[in-house]
Image (cartoon, rainbow, N blue to C red; front, side, top):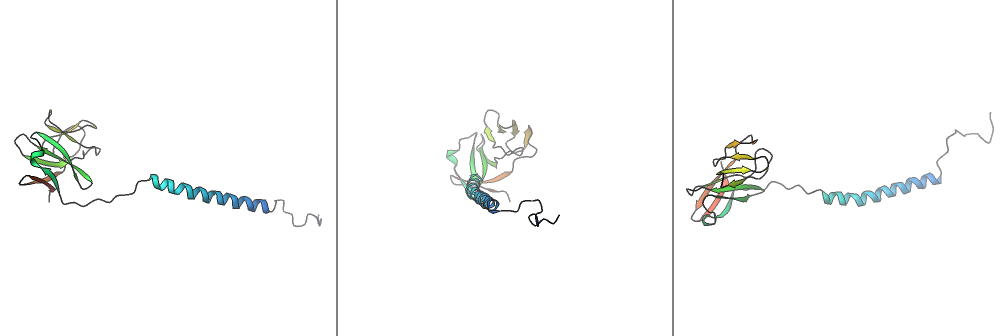
Length: 155
């Protein structure tokens, strides 16, 4: 049992130079793959943009907005729908549908603000009147100074 040739042999091969080289090569390959893949994945992920705080925007000239029509205006990072009624009254609402955040549009033929995603409809006061939208559109304040139209948040 005490054979000098097998003394200290536990049955498992001891790690040798080949195993050491294998670990070094695999570690180098993993580091190379990470150094190539990380920039690619970082490029594909869009950066987070903070909310732009805006209190008022100039929407354009009143003469550019025909009666019984609507247009979309940027209010910071958000769209706002500006509607000029037949009587000349101008109203503004959030152009983001309260159902699934689709952009709404003014439909002259229906006389409503309409969401094309699921046929949601709002009246010209921003109140939801049909379809799946759960809440009314957020109103914005419209100020007309001379020929210029300004939109601001309701306080």
